[in-house]
Length: 258
Image 1 (tube, rainbow, N blue to C red):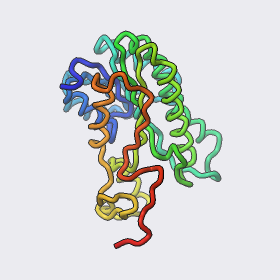
Image 2: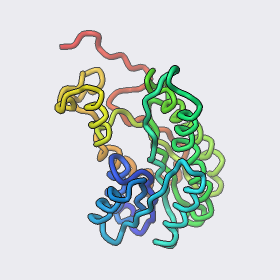
Image 3: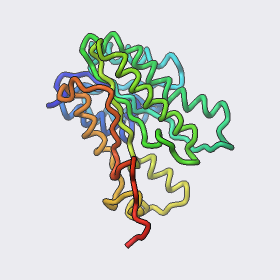
């Protein structure tokens, strides 16, 4: 029970990585606020989690969502030990299709919302000497041509993590960050189907993208998250970790496929 009696908020936890983190936190003894935008999906998740979970539906593109989320967790459980900023808008866009509205929405959900959530949670996190874990992407370093706004937002999130880790250390609040690689979430599976791949595409990933033959699963990320939310990682703060199958810097994939 590595998170026994802790209270943790996981945004975007009605599916994918967020759901896996929430389930693992509860398995490790925590109580968790499940967050999403679809009530039907959220109710399905909490139905299997019991009294250790509560549900809050909100749109993180709204500035007022952050204090509502924190208030919901405090109302349900009375304190807050951890905040996982996992929710994100993964949108396809390039230099030609990224207009002001799309860019602003990506930044509002992927950067502004984590900032406002941490701000709203500060008093509670100081009281428990709590931990923030921001879930970013290796796209933060450059990204792909068709993920311009998303990649820019993830670069900003990484800077936010490092800035606040430096700023909040003396207040006892830790901030760490994952840059996650390619993960087989339900949404990613369906996205690739919509882009023309066949239903068996996860079984045929090129070695350059997945040396192991398989891409990561949400459970891989959840297992790592437990350490950074637990007291085992205290007092480490400001860490940015790449969770991928190969080194992001200095990667030199083979040019010949065997």
